[in-house]
Length: 147
Length: 147
Length: 147
Length: 147
Image 1: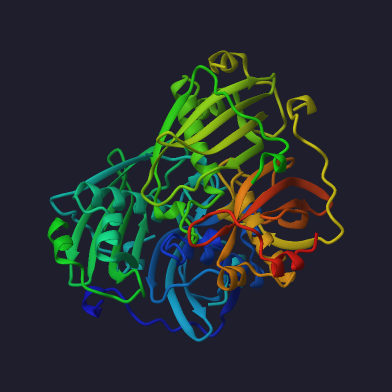
Image 2 (image 1 turned 90 degrees about the horizontal axis):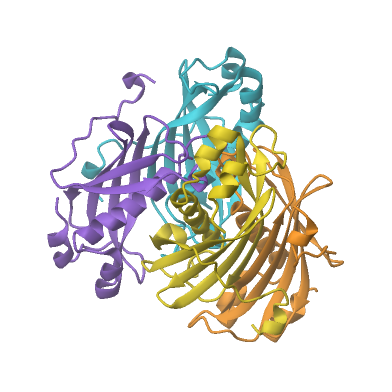
């Protein structure tokens, strides 16, 4: 695939503060092609993000309970580089790369040892649990998101 | 989220030939936020692509059996616009938008009636089943992909 | 596996009224063993049950909205007989086999043509949406469940 | 639900040797009912079994590579007792409870602290990878399965 076919691709430099999530690949993650099913990278990334927020002292459940707001996924941009296979141990490095009034952006890299398997850019929006409307990220939360 | 926060977004015009896949939303598609879990849009899109290829007379299984090649997902770019909820009926419109020697691109729009729920751009690469190496799309196949 | 290893197995005779749900097997349903991942039979069965309830004039969403109650799965007993594979078309035959005050039982058979792939017995309990407590099935609903 | 409605239920006593797998509940595990989707207990149980086999010195991948055989799920019997919810930490206790020539049985208990959430009985058959035919468990493997 030539770069000209991927006009919106750009190399990712992770922020200084990254959070690493480690998981094994199980049968449930794979498909009949013998590799991890492409949609499952997003599920693995959700687990990595959840644990990253928790390590920052900003667990998602607390945000929902205290402020009545939650993060919803607005956009994902996922570039697959090498397949992952059954029983492999992979690492997801998560970094918060941008903070807006009502949204945050993250970069998540899937690694197997030194090999990059995939790169994911995610944009999350802050929304009210009650009606799903976009709203500002509570200040106490924004302060804890180490960008 | 303002457009300025999404620098790589651009409106999608589907090609002339589109394939429509219709599905209902079941509990398995949703999450505790009451909406369709974001990764599941990719699963729904896979079903829509599979049926589109079949309608073109180019079923994926035949490609694997006759040519020993398969499509693998290289890149996805998914923009979520409105949530889908339990029991709703949604439509996925699939159009092939580009054809390279070893890859194809598609645009898939998720619709609920006239409302656009999400837009997905997918890039698929052609790979040999035996070793996963990138390879040219067999000519007989390229001819059937109506771009 | 000999029958003596399955002490609680018994042949299933479906009720007179059965509902048939048809689906294709996609990559998302399979695993690296090349067959449908065992947990996914339960997901396919949920779709079949949902459509069966709808055909009976008793859609689940209406039950939630009008009566504030829902069905929750209490027990599943699933016997796998033959594997299903990518691109196959399978049928799920659903029959309601028992009705209690606060629960219903169903039998669901997975078929590929005349071959039985799996047999599932499911017990559903009626629960209040508000607090999850077990409660009686509303009479208007029980009447519509053709046992 | 009265016991009389569950004729094949019997209390489970786990074997002396149990393996504990711990996981958090993420959005991907839940559904719009606000609880863990019922099919996902089987996925969580697969991860717990895989790690139990690994701790026994009998990893599944090694079995496939060295002996050309694999375990396939023949039967599951799953009894749901209490729902699990987003962000909860649960434990799965896995014990091998029976060993036949070509099959093993396991009991897996889902716990949240001292509360039992679900009990799963699983029967696995040994099958040849090449053709899926049932075959004897290799002796070296049977010896490592601590029943």
